[in-house]
Amino acid sequence: MILQTRATDRPSPPIRPEPARRLNPLERGLVLRLLTGFGNPPVKLILWNGEELCASAEPIAAVVRVPDRPSLLRMFVDPYRFFGDAYADGHVDLTGDLVQLLERIYRSSGDAAPNPRRWLRRNRNTVSGSRKNIHHHYDIGTSFYRLWLDSQLTYTCAYFPDESTGLEDAQIAKMDHVCRKLRLRPGERVVEAGCGWGSLALHMARRYGVKVQAWNISTDQVSHARQRAREEGLEDRVEFIQDDYRNIAGSFDVFVSVGMLEHVGTENYRSFGGIISRCLTSAGRGLIHTIGRHRPMDFNKWMDSRVFPGAMIPSLSEMMQVFEPNNLAVLDVENLRLHYALTLRHWLTRFEAAADTIAEMFDDRFVRMWRLYLAGSMAAFTTGWTQLYQVVFNRFTDNQVPLTRAHLYREP
Image (cartoon, rainbow, N blue to C red; front, side, top):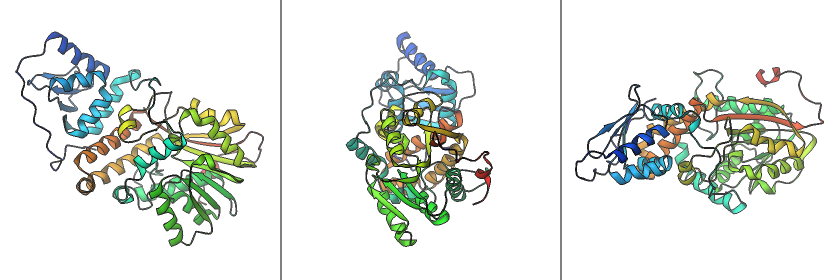
């Protein structure tokens, strides 16, 4: 997928004129050190004075024009955050394949980036903080998400039985995959933490005959989900509650959370697992679907501050704090990383097709910011820096489990 700079983007600000002197040894050393920190990716830097620098012998994947000396210094101090802002603002001009460039940076970085968990997060997921964080990302208009998500507004990893499967069918296949893992039976009570625009809750009720209580703190999403339930005649089987997951109460046969653990925060995992344990029956079971890491790492600072505040992506070892302290046993773990890369390819293609409309809804800066977010996410999945885990669990004493995984691949 080639994401070139669009002709309709707001033109980059003109490069400020400076004396056309060459870099001194200190400045040149900073540039080379910056490139080394990124793993010497195949990127050509064209500086404000016309100098061209590249620390890689590989074919050039992209060209980045740096407009002035202050921009170079800021990029050296905080490269990930500054590059994101500079690209979104149009202060750094980039030509080439954006996804390929980001993939090469991830692959070139090796174990050097992203950093292990070290920095203090500002957007913490307290009760009030979670509302603010969710509002920032999800309550920016359902009409925006309609432009590039599937028809049911499923904003999580799809499941592709075949690479040629379309996005609409792949999202339905994902929901069936989840339901088969949960072994849903008609009449069972299901609680869903973080229900998005309601597609999974409605699918479970409609196709599997269960009753669902779905929790979410996004105003836009809950409003849309309730409208869909009314239109489909499912109000008696699906209840959408606009409230924090910490207030879940009652008794349920099944717990499910798809794409919400990223918003919980590792510091809250033990209490999150306590809520699950408290609400499940003695033979209860559940599934958590989440973006993950192959080892503990910090979330990207730029994404945290600009696009996805409060997000924290766990490793499997960190996820165990949900289960182990609460006597919940892990039954199955599946990694769908490449399915998310395919999902993002569809989203990016649709996003680019709607870029002009999105620019009219917001502005060109918003388009570039979200393009970088989606392209960076795709690159993280294709290179393995980000994973997608589905973890099935139950109470550790429950013996009502299948002996094989055959049920996962039968049509319901």
